[in-house]
Amino acid sequence: MSPTKSRLIASLGFIVICIGIVGFFFLHFPELKAKYFLSELNSLQVGKSTFQDAQGVALRIHATQGIACGPNACTWVARISNLNLPERWRRTELTLVVGFEIRDSILVEKGAGLQFGTGTSVSFVHVDEKEHWRSASTEPVSVETQYTSDDPHYRAFVRMTPAASESDRKRYLSLNLHCLSKYGGCKDAAELLPTVEWK
Image (cartoon, rainbow, N blue to C red; front, side, top):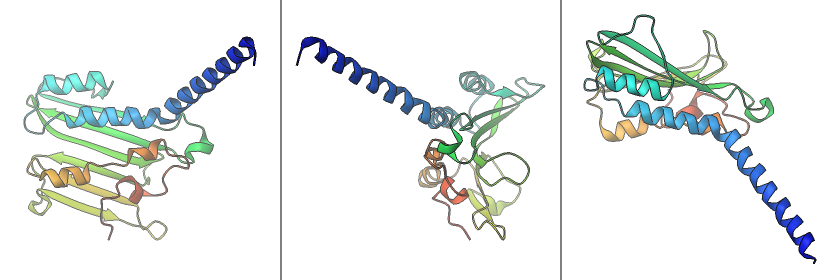
């Protein structure tokens, strides 16, 4: 084989590898960005993190803040979806939403959820944490699931407090972010948080 032909084959191989790398990152970008969002959210501690801590996270994940925002009261929300992926790849729209709230300069609530589509009747899983919930039965961890006649895995709500054990945290904060980039997407809310026991 001539040196020219060898160089041509090597160049073509390099181009194919580059295209493959770019394609991989394009298809997995929503999942990678969602992991970053969650790692930043998990760095905040309910009852301990300050306004400055929350503001720093908000800036890093480009979260949108409420209209009136200051140390006394502020909320932030950030979203990442798979909507930019080809429909044939993703099949359904899926969005990760993270949010957190400050009152009197201290973080009082944070949460994350994965939801299918948009609107008032979407299927989702949502994990929230705050210092206390209205009903004592929800502390330190409460899991509520909902179903419809068409969807046995419609919605799941997980409510925690800072007193939740590390094993419970690991269990219920393990949102299946692969659903954002998976070929064919995920089918229902049970796939979004597989650790939930559906009733």
